[in-house]
Image (cartoon, rainbow, N blue to C red; front, top):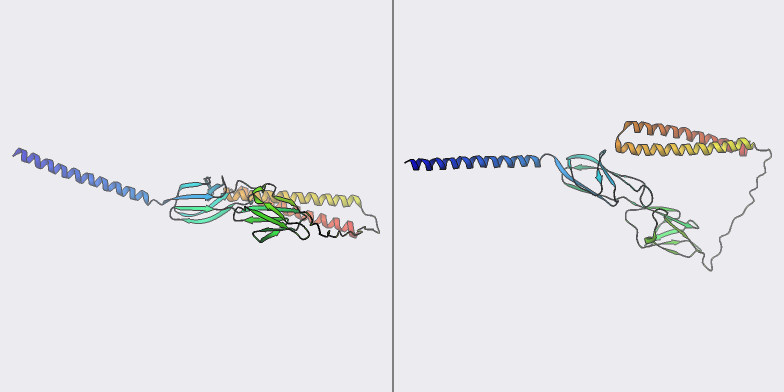
Length: 273
C-alpha cells in the first residue's frame, strides 16, 4: 500500500514539475516576442565614395559602408558627407529623407565630376557619338567614364583622349593641332588707342581700382565663410553657427555694394569725367 502511495506521489510531482517548466518556457517565448516588436530595425548604407561619413539626422553613425546599424522605426534624414571635396568628385553632400519601417539597405551614388580643357578653346567633347559640350567643359556623370573621348574643332585634327589617363586633380588638358590644309583663323587687329580731351586723375583712378579689388576680395571671402558655416550648421544644428553664417552673409552684401560703387566711380572718372 505504501509503495502504491509513493508511486502516485512521484507521478503527481512529475506532472506538477512538467506544468511549471512548460509555463516558464512559454514566458520566455513571450519575452522574445516583445523584444522583436520593440521598434528597432536594421539600416545599412552603401555608397560609391570610400570613407564617406554617414549621418542619421545630425548624429554620425560611421563611415560607409555602414552595415546593420540598429535604429528605431521612424522618419529620418540620411546625410552623406563627401570626404573628397575637390578633384574627381562634385563638391557636394547627399541628403535624403526616408521612412524606416523595416530592415533597409540604402545605396547612395555621388555624381562623378569631370573637367575638359583645350587649346584652342570651344572644341567639342564627344563620347560614343554624343556631344557632351564644348571646352572649357565642366561635366557631371552618374557613372565612371572609361574608354575614349574625342576633342573636335573645325580646321583642327581630332584628338583621341584615353579616360584611363584622366587626372582627377587637373582634369583633361589637351592641345589641338591644325590640319595640313587648314586655313589659319584670321586675327582681328584694331587700333584701340584712346585720346582723352582732358587729363585723367590717375591717383583717384588707381585708388578706386584698388578699392574695387579689395571689396571684391572681401565679398568673396565673407560669402565663402557663410557657405561653409551653413554647411556645418546643417550637420550640427548649432544655432550659433547659423547666426555666424548670417552675419557673414550681411558682410558679403555690404562688401558687394562697396565694390559696385567703386567700379561705378572708376568707370566715371576713367571715361566720362
